[in-house]
Length: 497
Image 1 (tube, rainbow, N blue to C red):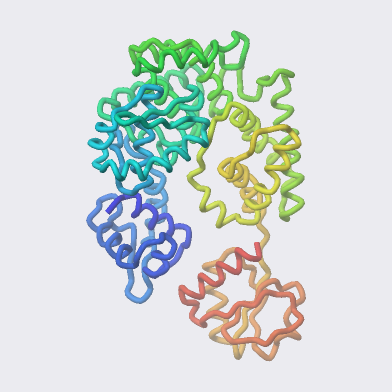
Image 2 (image 1 turned 90 degrees about the vertical axis):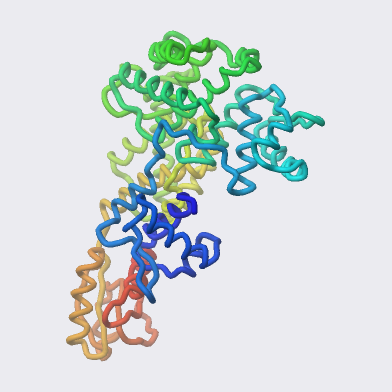
């Protein structure tokens, strides 16, 4: 079984935070329950996954107590940098992606159909069936897929080819530049790592993820393409090097020299401009040279001012849809520090993938929906390219952080048949397991609704209660607060948030 499938199960259990039955896991992952059981069984034999997943008869599976941090680290752990991934044939989609990479790396030169059939262990019939999918994908990047009797090729601008490669790699791996590599690329991977480390040393700063990954991916593609003679003519279309006075220009020229020295390849001077674009599209940690990302990048030399203006508009639009302490100077400055390089990413078509997007969409749905609703408005008002869902996900995290930091406790009443004994035990369990709840009192069924305070937001009851005009949300739980009841309480808290 593939580690990616096991990682998907671990990620699901992290998100749910409780036991899930095999049928629930199967439904989420769109596989059979039999497959889930086989995956869990195989996890016991995998050193990376053993003891991470706990199973209990009648309850299902969950992250083992005390292993939550290990599980989170496991799902976000990149593959070793020097371990190139082989072509992936596990699914038709993965096979097509690998074929695209082969064609893109050789573009505009043709690739022998015989080589494709042999490398990917497919028949002529299968390749013919794949062609419409490959052609449709190429169309999305302004590229042309051509098929002759004995060859296939992809043609188009060098810029489009690189964008397509970056997108294809990103779809295949959390470390995009490791995806669909061929034999002999381990040396290039090492070269890329050394080149980025040289950039960080020159800047006296660190390029954090996901920006480092983007830069590494770009350099990896540059070197892979530069090894092919047919690419040299295409590189001329990329233009010239950066203007000497532009932000990060000096660092970019030095990085290009270092990359040429490490790789032994003669690279076009325009590559320095592309390195610079990735740097001004990134954030750095430390004390970089005076050419920081917040300095002038657009013609009117007010790029950071524009970043603040866009930030203020985002805050205004999101605050209009979601209640929260969003009008703070800290949020404004932190978000502006993110949005300013984001504006460069949009204009230079630097794509950032967000590995947490699914969790953000679930855990902070209201914030995420507000940000994605604001994104097209802002793009239109400021004449920006479309803001992707992945970028919106990162922006959402800043608003979610403010909500979490200033989270107000939920005023809660506990109720059972008598108001004594069982309800007191229930109160203690709730206080211990849900710090978000502020228990205002314990009540009996006879107290409802007359004695329930008007400001109560949530009533956790072990007995059914009739509908009343009270605005409080009522949730029925087991008197012993079982795992299922805990999940229901957790869901109610999310709704009230």
